[in-house]
Image (cartoon, rainbow, N blue to C red; front, side, top):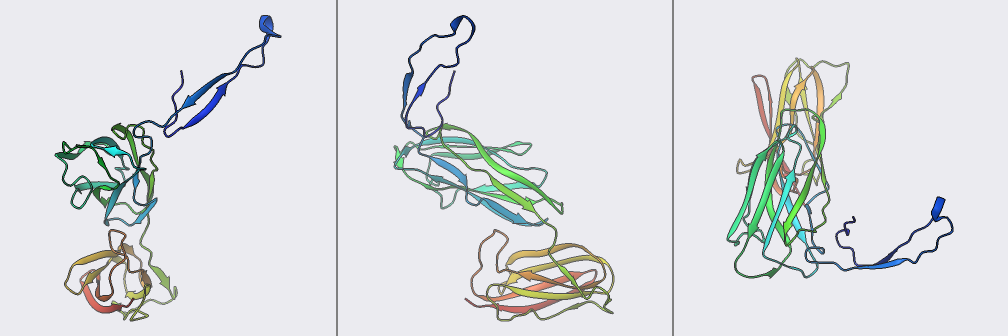
Length: 276
């Protein structure tokens, strides 16, 4: 019993060889087979990135993208597997996707890192490709780890679709200790440098005692852009770099941003400018 690989389109041969015992010396004729790509063979459904890198507590989104070669579709189904020891599934959003006007569309949380997505439209077959859905996750309270987001069990018009998994890397806060022999006498948050910047800037801070540290980035309207770092730090002087990327992994627009430093009861906020 054989299964034709998704997207296979061509011909080949079955041959017999290496006869032994009572069949030694036998002759045989090869059998030719032909395969043709069927409905759904031209589809690929995969996450929008191959790698997501975040730290504990971060919020981020995964867009599932459908690409095809002129195929038509009016129904689909698939399972989404994610590392639930690293990620908490928050919700999903069909706004602005190719499925936004479909009669039925849903993502069900089956538990244990398994989501099931399905949808159909009665408006007729459509030739389309693009974003199917946005999935929103929060990184669990874990400092490091690695896992994969994979799509499988395709049904209906994408039954033979191909797919690629995406890797999720959870990393510890990226603060670097400077002057290891120096112990600051007080908490401090210093001006970032360079400022203005594009797209990297460095933020320095002092910790006179060990404690929990959190640095958050906000836009000028007070909207939370990202948590630059969050974790327990020993006493010392540190710096951390921001690359102008928000919590969803997207580049932010040029403008004025605020960075807030919190350690124990100490709080400080400074302003920085991104130019493009």
